Image (cartoon, rainbow, N blue to C red; front, side, top):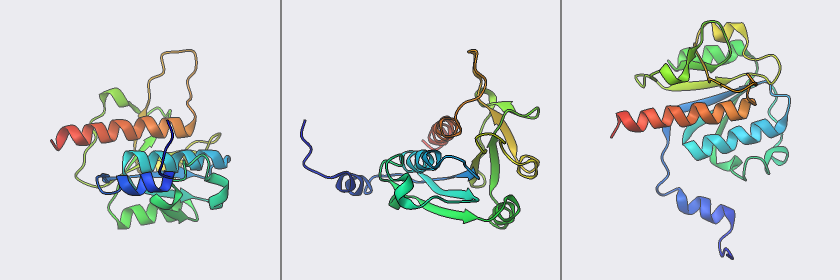
Length: 174
């Protein structure tokens, strides 16, 4: 199959019918630029309003390939620290949902998302996870993994969380 449109032309054509949800993502001091690119792609594909980035945000060129060239289609808001991010979420009255293997976490299979307020799904740093100050102010969810492994790549976890959040939103708003 030969495509007659560029990727950007296809994206622009899809903008007409694209949905946006009261959902955003947050990445915390990612070590690997590719993971930010994957989150940009996930946010665009699942209709997230925004991507919050705590810490360093890589240059556009560093994430172009892994973002599927969707960088320009996602609103990216930088935050200097977890505290600055929490202050902003409090100001905007956003509920935080963390994907974290924490003692207080509830299985995503048993969690019903509430859409009374905007949701921000937080995924942690690849090695250190989510800072305690954010976990304390969040609902914590884990993704069951019945295999030998117990920890997904942070971008993969974000995709699963976004999928389930959007699925439940669509079910409630039919």
